[in-house]
Image 1: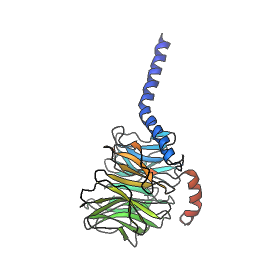
Image 2: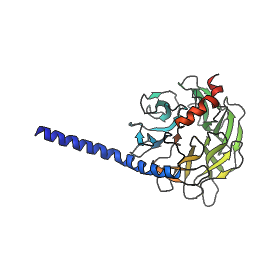
Image 3: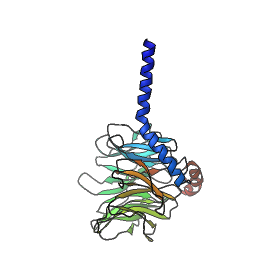
Image 4: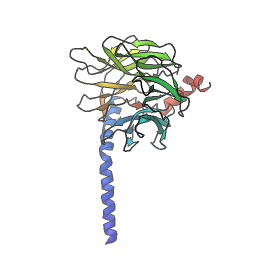
Length: 334
């Protein structure tokens, strides 16, 4: 009799465990199959890490060809993931200590480690292409409201400021050869996209129209384009946010998404530069979408219920083997 009840309990526990996991697993499996039909060139070994409030608070998840894997599960909130170039680490931001700080963990969510211990908030981490540095946004001091762009070694040491303008400077993103960094700066009360050298020198504008907010720039892995979100504060009807792309010199600005009632933001590139993942509230809640680099074939991937950070798309293993020895050799051998 005891064995019978014990067996029944095991069956119930297994059923409950399966039920708890199935909403994420099944919803993604079906969507992923449809996505592969629309974008057959997406490698199966190119996972996307993203933030979601799917289960009530901000946690990090990984989308793979096998399904969705939850990487963090804490009482605090984890956000803003960024892959290391060799895909063994993920940098992210957490309020675990009560103040936003940068952490790293293994690609499977294990060995969580804090890198910064700053008295002011730290956010927007992004690895350099050779993996030796992390650029990020840091509130400069406890009395200033304006953040700046900083860089540190990948182990959290040697923090130094790159940008020196009095206004806000934030949201850094490396060029694929490591020579420059795109970032957002507030000039004349609006957010503009600038590019500076990797040491902070020679800042110059790429997108700076009056009355327009430019945010979340991401440089394509082939180094030819910058995708970003754009909001026109004086548009009629009022603009909520669209995805645009331009070349790295600031020319040939092209609108990829267009609607006055939907907020599209936080774009990022696939590692072959052929697709763009982004966040959108076009179905009433925040979802993760993918589209071709020209704005066609928009597909919903997952409901995230959060838009606080852009997704991070890892390089496929085969592409990484091709790029690392050639593209990053100069940086690795310094």
